[in-house]
Length: 58
Image 1 (cartoon, rainbow, N blue to C red):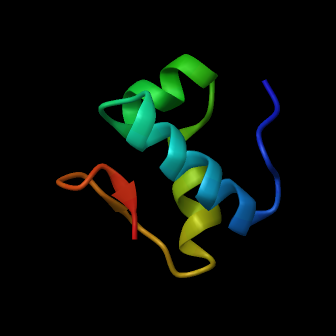
Image 2 (cartoon, rainbow, N blue to C red):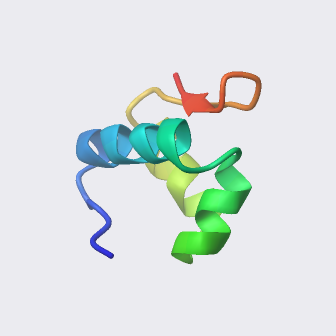
Image 3 (cartoon, one colour):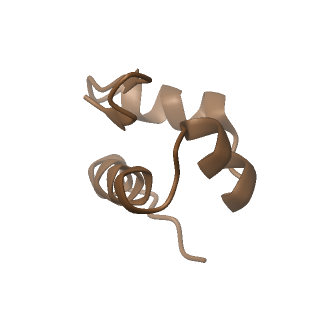
C-alpha cells in the first residue's frame, strides 16, 4: 500500500483511515507496518497531534 510521504497528504490519509477503518492509531500502525513514533513526529512537525478520544490527528 502506498503511504504518502508529504506530511499534509499523510495527515489526510491517516485521518481517513482512522475514520473509516481503524479504531486506534496503534491498530492502524500495526496493520500498515508503520512506526507510530515516526508518524507522530512527522505530523507533530506540522502542528498536529493524535487525539485518542476522537481517534484522529488534530
